[in-house]
Every structure is written in structure tokens, then in C-alpha cells.
Length: 104
Image 1: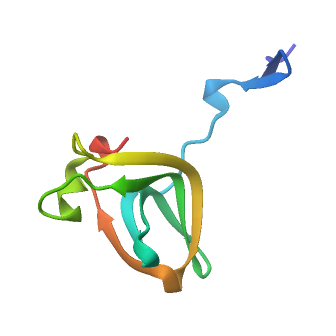
Image 2: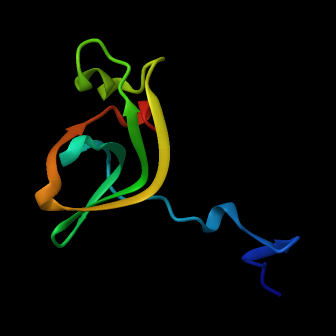
């Protein structure tokens, strides 16, 4: 008999932790037009940049600009989880490499 992939309790489905696929792509800070800044696993899909496990950096909390966040969020940084962000490449302003271990 095989092991179940999901378990339902009170009408909520739970999945096995080892069945969840890790997001592909390196973690990066993505700056979009209109002031939107996200951090997450970045990939490209045709004419779109896709940020998986995206978090919106609502308030940087820096004194020397966005580059301070390369080594992870600061004490005053405010971040909101948003899931997956898909934006057209024409909206992409810049992509900033970060220390992967500080943004996990």
C-alpha cells in the first residue's frame, strides 16, 4: 500500500512536506516600475519576469539605499508575503543579487 500524498482534516487538505517542490532560481531583489520592490526566487517566462515565494519590500528601513538589503533585511525593513509575482519585462528596472543564505 502506498503512502498518502494528502490528508484532510476538518475540510483542510494537508500535503507531505517532502512533496513540496522548492522554488527554482536564485533569490534576488527585483525593482519594478511604479516603485514596486520584491525579493524572491527569480525566473523568466517569455516576456515576463516571475518571482516565486515573493515578498514585497514595503519599507526598506535603510539609511544608504536599497543596496544595504543585499545582506538580508534590516531591523526596520517591512516585508509582506505575496506569493507569485509575474511582471512584464518592460516593467523591470533592475535585479540585484543578494546573499542567498540571508534571504531564505
